[in-house]
Length: 463
Image 1 (cartoon, rainbow, N blue to C red):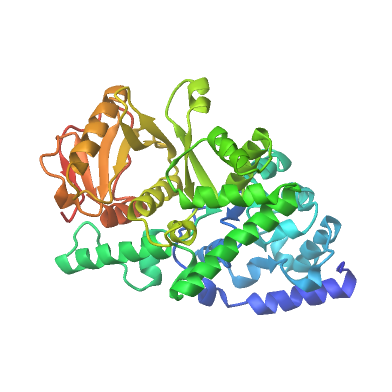
Image 2: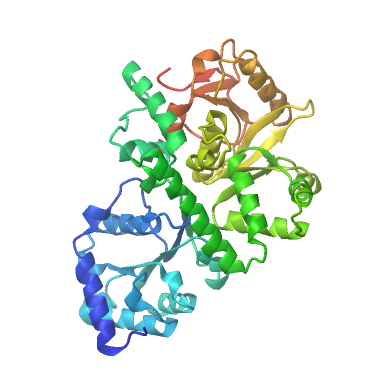
């Protein structure tokens, strides 16, 4: 239905009444929103309810806390059957109706416009460019992942786009959601340490999707499987007109069940051929790209300056959330090593790191080489089972070997049981996993800056 005249006014007024004064009940303080530029976009992991909208509620709450009156903020959601058929030309009515109700905000003051699920309106980018050029406002838009790809938005917005990707709950947010957040991860008691270890085990099994929290194991599996089915159907098959959905589903199941494993398109192509599935190898490369665009998986490439070597080596692929692993693993059980490595990878991406993996000349492998925005590098080895014979020695040996090729990188081990690492060289820091997540999120575990790393041995605070 196309809104016009009195109908548009009624829809706007109803939405304004519904949202007025209700920010506190929707606001989830899991993310801090900084000062906004003139335009920001939000895209998130699939269609888990509340992700993108929560980001906008946080912006609204921050503006209210800064003193902006509620009538000076427009929050409008387009995921409403009464708005089906709305076009970019009709969006101008929204602006005019708002300023008709609040004319004092048109010239003298800068009003924030928060528009949720705007991708449902065809051609919204032209509307956004126009109002930014002609009106005195800050514009925030949010929408589902694949319909608002960062490269497409950046192109249509001509360099004005600032993307904010909404991830599932981090471990810190997971604790906050459960009312078990530790006030000071730098100083934890023995009881808090035990609690954090148990909560991390739960987090690695349940994952970070809000609706999965508190659900029974059966309901959680069905919920997460439905998320994957939805993203495959709506964000990949329908969007890109996929002609071989069977091959796409097989690829998806393989990637989600083998988190952190080395993946080669060539080997998977040969495996499909052996099963009688006929598909072009280039199509598999394209399908994998679609899955990444839809935030279903994250690829981690080999760390090398040679683009040819990078492309000829297998990549490591991680699901968007550790809770997906037991859903698609053939055993149906928690895989601690895969889950912890996945959670660490997602946290590094959440913190803005550029992530790759390392294979040394001696044949050792280090899980992650992170290049931070500040310019420093960090080698990170994730070890979920350090108590097994020879495990700690093997992990340390791999780090020392990788450090020869990356002498400026800080060397770290992330493990649930740091007490199993003994006689560690002074250039390696051993972090208890639960504390590492909390300190990284809160910024108390500083990313290394460019230059030589410290040679002093260190462990996570509270050790």
